[in-house]
Length: 69
Image 1 (spheres, rainbow, N blue to C red):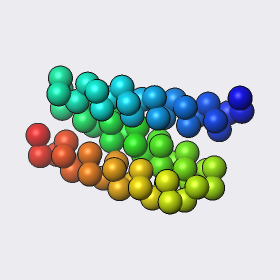
Image 2 (image 1 turned 90 degrees about the vertical axis):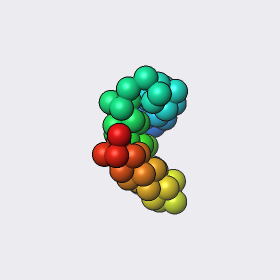
Image 3 (image 1 turned 45 degrees about the vertical axis):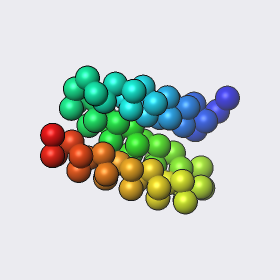
């Protein structure tokens, strides 16, 4: 497993964990936004720009949701 694949695995795993914990604290919503930003970076780094764009949008949606909590 190369470093980029490991980075993507960690990013997506964090997204799943923080999404599952969102109801416990607004800070998990912010953490989910950060994990989505990491997922977006992974998408762009591996050359899958549609994935990178969608994850960036999810990061913005989660960040906006966090600011309204």
